[in-house]
Structures are given as C-alpha cells and as structure tokens.
Length: 116
Image (cartoon, rainbow, N blue to C red; front, top):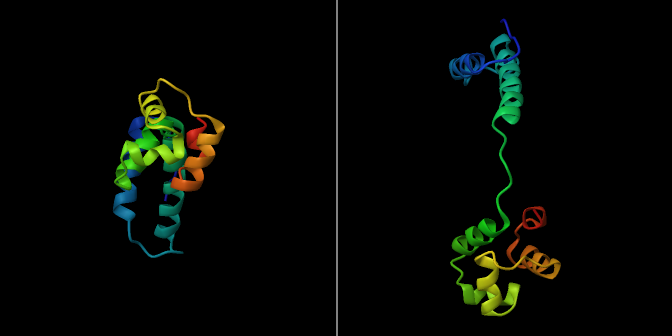
C-alpha cells in the first residue's frame, strides 16, 4: 500500500480507479485501511478543486415549490401578495428577513441558503 498526496488530475484519476478496485473490501483489513485513506485524500482534493456552491435562494424556492406542487398563489402566504411573489421569483425584489423566516418555518428551506 503506497498512498501519496493527490497533486494532479492524473493522481486523482489513479486514486479513483484504485478506490473502484477496493470497493467492498473487508473493513479493518489492510485493503480496507487503504480504501479509507484513499477516500479521505480524494474527498480533500475534491473539496478544494470541485467545491459545491450553495444554491441560489430563488432557485431553492422554485425547487421547493416544484417538490411540493405549489403554485405562485400558494406562495403568497409566505411572501406576501401574488405581485410580491412574482417580484421575488423574477428577482426584481430581495427577500426580507420576515420572508426568510416564513420560508424557513413553512417550507423548511434552510435560512443559510435564503440569506446567501
């Protein structure tokens, strides 16, 4: 077992290939330990080179609306009037703190996404 830091995309691809070969090995074995270490360094490399950015607040609202089969009319109780809903969803108006609290409590959209 020779584990080295991932410095290049080639190193990354080699580590991924090795992980695929080791997948499913017995835990607490030499191969299991190698798999754990490789996963840790691959995760660190991915976090640095392929960060996952938080979603846009409006996109998160639209996504939740789609998940819950909600219409713009349904959103009025969280954002105000239907015209206010349209202004928010077309990005002509910013969310207020009151709206963020309402969306968080009512639709369980994380506040840190809505405040981004």
